[in-house]
Image 1 (tube, rainbow, N blue to C red):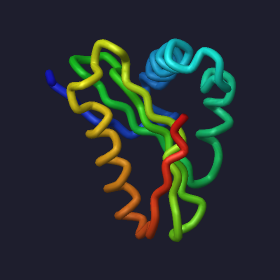
Image 2: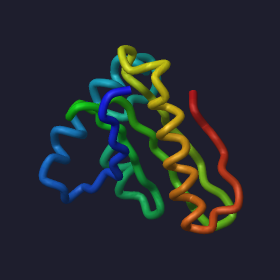
Image 3: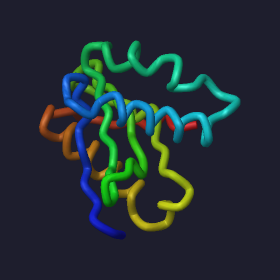
Length: 116
């Protein structure tokens, strides 16, 4: 799997523009006909109780997961995408496990997936 790191996206990080650019490229390739994250990325992440985790392999963004938790009753996983050349290597599973752990820490009782 290479040297994988799961990172929580922070808008104020020094490399956020690069990370956003990489995620938008993944989004456009995987979801070309759907509502693109490219248009709604900032809007989604500015919402209260929403987050994004991404996996980085050898310095390259390999995939991401977007989620929200409107209350402690439930959370939603709204997007999950992994670059084609990183698929079937456990990156999607690692992202899902990381989101589940984040939700557990917030005492979320149920997690729903809204992945297209």
